[in-house]
Image (tube, rainbow, N blue to C red):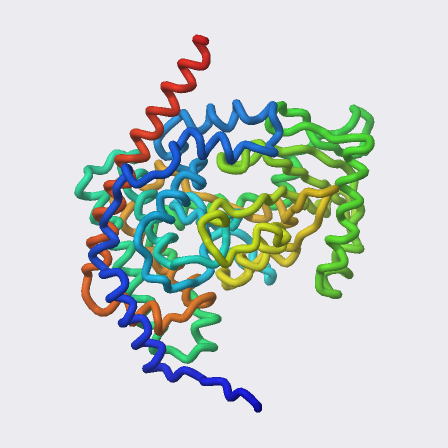
Length: 442
């Protein structure tokens, strides 16, 4: 017997979202109870260090100890565990996984134009859509506190973020599906932090990266360039280790589309380095390869970045921990971004899995200082709209819109959650600092 597949109507999809309110009411998303934790934050962080470069683990902890926001950036495993014990509506989309205010930025699209979008997908995975929103809510609150805002102002920024998300999702629910897939956010220039990031990105040309990261190998005129030594953040790699990195370009090249393979064939590798990046990624193996195309004036930098399993994997029953995590990261990025790096791909070195992408190709990020004054609220709205687009592209906007409805209760709930989780983050940060001081005295 041939099984006839049921194709859900738009109204059925919307009704499904509305029915999920019985599973978890929208106001219930305000709740956070640290007593429900099944493991201490320090234990979860220690577990996440397994497999990292031992010499860099201390640096990661030092970066996390600098500020509550620095701690938050490095503590995705802690928040993943906290979110997993909260009630969920069970509406799934692709998650950025580490949705916070500094993981959006400007970069060059394949056609050379500068775009602004979510740009960090190390933790990407399919999961409950509200997990991204709760992480963003906490980050907006912490960013507000870190940039001198009053608590009421920070909370209002969170609510504006989620209200913008909900309004945009309702708009997506009324649009043709193909239009959702290519929707352009038009309000970017209205937010000063975004403008600042675009200005930074304009300056971050391949030639600028060449000057920042490399130097002439000798004082002779026309001497070839190679990576600088700026330990511990940038260290040249030679010998067998460099050969292994370059060998990984073989399987990487094979997964690229033919026209990308052709373009890459014009570039030859010149030098290899190990680079420390970010906060959450410190301790993972991150290599940079410097290529030259039509001479020294045509540099290309590829980043080969180790990708372990997403921090959310233990808490999602349908997750596949044995999945190729470089591929998981690249595919999650393509699912959520409107335009992605043309050299985005994956490879492996030994038994470790890596993402491959361009390094600093017209990239520009947001600093907390950019969110002083009116910048926080304007930027929070941009965050909400970009998350809505990513979730609508990778999930079902009718189901999500059906769940959210037309009121502001969900936004108010997440405003409260953001404050509660930011409070807990500050306590966890203090606990980390005390543990580091105690360890130093021991």
